[in-house]
Image (cartoon, rainbow, N blue to C red; front, side, top):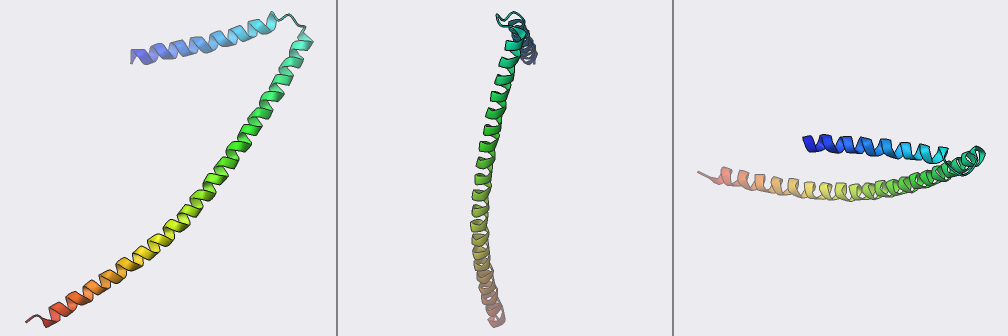
Length: 106
């Protein structure tokens, strides 16, 4: 349990340190505030576009997986119907054979 607590503390320290470093880098950057804001805006637009593209790709993969699952469902449902009918027929034959055996028994 202590290892988990230590890792959690490390992770929090890592994130806080990273954010502090990012803020310091922005404040001490050799470019002007206007240039920094422009750079940040461009990077945010770039990241938004990448996120949008990734979301579209994930949606396409999910739709393909859903279509494949639907096709597999249809095949499985048909197979269950077929085998269920076979089991019912075999059961009916077995019951009628047993009835015939019971009726002929003394």
